[in-house]
Amino acid sequence: MQPDYIEYQSGTPYEFSINATSAVTTADLTAGAQLDGSANDAQVVLPDTFVTPLGFASADEAVGASVSIGITDILGQKHTVDATIVGVSLDSLLAAGAGANDALIAELADAQSGGIETAVTSYGVAVAHFDAAMSDAEVTVLKADLAADGYTASTIADQLGAVQTVINGIVGVLNAFAVIALIAAAFGIINTLLMSVQERTREIGLMKAMGMSGSKGPFLLVVANPE
Image (cartoon, rainbow, N blue to C red):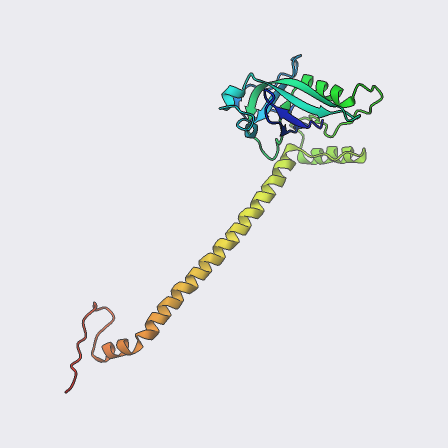
């Protein structure tokens, strides 16, 4: 599905997208409830980033409101589909976009087809469930079988691993900058101490010549000016 925008009460329209797996996944809600796949009415779970722009004072206020989703069909005609906000979710890398139940997806699909029955129906993502007791080797074989049929398969663990790899890379770069800053600070301290000792070499030598040891505290050195 490729909707164009979402708007509330004929307000400002905002660019809008639907998460392809939202109908079969569980959203991380901040308000409201999960999508009802068996419901006949169109439902949407709104990302929290849309709450304020659409004119809602809070996530709780958005729950139960009706919004209009604009979509363009294959003939270039504009259509709008009304849906009820049943929940507000946190937006994330793995759950980007809004959630839509089967009823809303069906309405958007009909609008996008433009009423042409010969329009080709295509799917960008398919969600398959497998036995959680399968070993890693068995999952690898399953993905290989799917790849042989022309599909690219990835598990939730694979997706989380990709995100974790990016995070680890960022942390590594930050740690490298921290080490560089620590080394630079250490050289600065050492340089300051060396310069201080260098500037007081004659004074320290005079103190040693007068019998002053390093364990004794500071003192005032008074030298008479010979007349």
